[in-house]
Amino acid sequence: MRDDGIWLGENRVCGISVTGFGTAMGLGRLPRGRVFGGDLVRGARARLLRGGVVIAEDLRVGALIREKVVGKRLEAREAISAGRRCMVAIGHGDVREGDHVEVYTPANTAGLDPDLVLGYQVQPDRREELGRAEVDELSSDPLAGTVARVALATGRLRLGDRVRVLRGGQPVAETLRLLFMTDEDRRPIGEASVGDRVLVGLGHPGLLPGDMVVAFDVPPPTWTEARTHRLKVQEAHSADDLAMGEVFPSRKSPAGGRILAAGHRARLLRDGTVIADGLTIAHLRRTGTLTATAFEWTQQTRPWTEVWLDFPDLRKGDQIEPYQVLPAG
Image 1 (tube, rainbow, N blue to C red):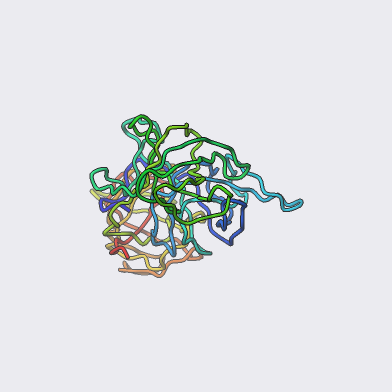
Image 2 (cartoon, helix red, strand yellow):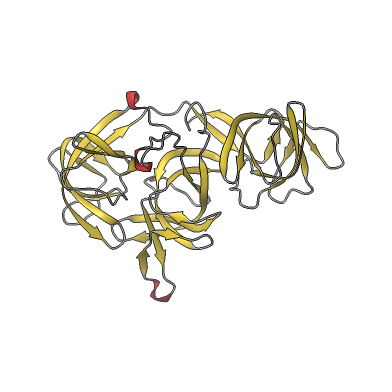
């Protein structure tokens, strides 16, 4: 999470709740789960949440693997429809059962090629280059897609590194991840150094011989966020600078914190797109009670709860995403 929060205009595409793990040749151990909320497309941006806390940002869906029921055969897919199970490579080595992968399209007000939109934690003047490798040749792997044979010119490469691709010195792809790396005998390795020739997969099909793969790091974030369950607005009423929404917990919301309290921050989603952020939950009231400062909240919470928010244009069908800002780490 950037210190200035989630960018307005981000569209939430879908999610995956991690229920286990599988192994795919060349890609190693991958998280497995069911897609919900929309279709999952290879190349999409993602973040990782654990218990509602954002623990990793600027990930990429670099490979989608579907396990056929008959014969347990694996096949690569460009997209997985909602409700289907799959394995996914996102470029993060510490995914755990119960984690949630949130897939989104970032805001793009400048109308850039989507591959050139920077990540949330990528600020060009604070990027630290870790290594450069030139693409010698390309091949295709039935599960991993495009595989590049590269020669390291400077520094080092490590599995999960943030990666960008330069062509003639100009960026052609930003915010990728190093999904897998092997030696020339296809044995998985975790790190490569200057002079090594290795095979790498970035989950990006547009590579060309001569491209430069640049691994980099960014300063760790100062803040992260902890979310409670997302709230779906059933009815909305406005008065002056506040709006009151009668809300239920969204069935499609990933598991999060259990306490919903006045004073928590919130963002507002309309048709899956973030239209407001940095809002404040002013008051809460549950049926049959007086105004309260906090409630314990789960997806089974009944009946509806009234939430007052400093956003007069609240509408039926909107979703309120409460969160708290916490120190990272």
